[in-house]
Length: 148
Image: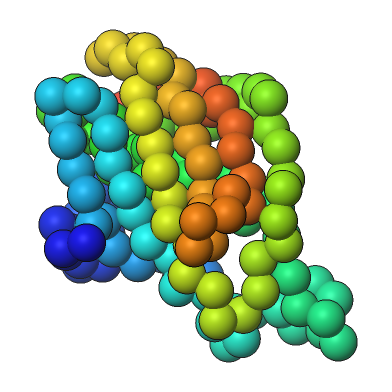
């Protein structure tokens, strides 16, 4: 897959910064159909591996959900052409199917189910290779940046 957005462009949209910026690049973007694919390169240098099973490091599932939410935030920003920030409101139907380890490349697949200038809902899945690691539906609200 080709590079659509690099980390510098992602940082222009998302307010997250190290260690909480969890999307390295966007490799696919289809605004007409509301689809996006982001990528997270999981390395042993991630701070969470210091305490999340140091002898058997596994990426926390909640951080995989956050990476999916951030990818969805980029999609919503591009699709709705708003300068607001998407805040996570609800997670439903979350399933953790495969652990994610250092060295894995997480592909973050997001599709819009509903989106407006006020908020919406996305369907998301994170894959490693052809295997699904995590899947869920995420609802969000859009707020002005100065409301944070």
